[in-house]
Length: 380
Image 1 (tube, rainbow, N blue to C red):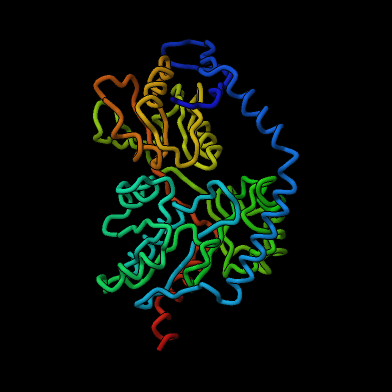
Image 2: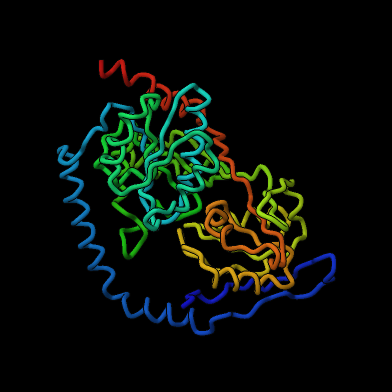
């Protein structure tokens, strides 16, 4: 049975080449869904605060064990490990940052491997993030398994060319000894005033940022003194680098899985529907509006949601009157096998995302390369 939240509607005027000035909205496809979700939230609300206290106690005990070195293992044979993580649930831009680091290491003559959990992957299938990495980073192996120590120890002896490991979402995965611990903070979220799960979105208390070697700010259109001061308060140092997500071009899929690259201006005055299965879709919607697109509606999709044919059929039906369906690369790697282009009614647009580290890039590059290139010297 297909379960979808009430469709988000954008009650705004869309100016299109064939529409003049008219209001294009789609009604909710599953009436009552939003009410039911809210009702369930209200019922469970009194239980969240004590659950948050209990969760905090469990996290504190777990971290004390890791602080003593219990259960922490080095990968064998020895290779420098760079962890990229965050302190909240939801997306902060880890995948673009890991991609940026992998490209930096490759350009510097190194051979990284990416190790990740592989969230929501079925046995024998790639997770969405694993598939995205493999498509974006030619020649970089991506290992997906909950037991990352065991997986790396099985992989590394047969791959002597690998000289470093990028640990995706590793801040809480403390079983793997790391040589550099990087934590990302999303400037568009209220992370630095948030509280622990399940009341808020924090995986662990903000004071635990002191454990990181460096904090990096993502989705930041500019440096923010308040964010900087709060990070310094919890981490002990100001953020090492500031970054934002940019689109270099659009990948356009019209009548086949073969892509055509077009400039961002293609979106100007286009009526679009979005289906964004990412932790934080707001930056994507913001960039669409900045490019001049008119968002008619958003088809809600959970982070890492596994798409099926029924969901894609709903999306196709809701695109009547639209000029494109926009999804992220993480959505595309899951949806492309389900799309029959002979019956699809609008182009599919996948923005090509690049990370713009506009402040602290040199310092970050030096820290990363020193970690990798100094590893053998320190061990020797």
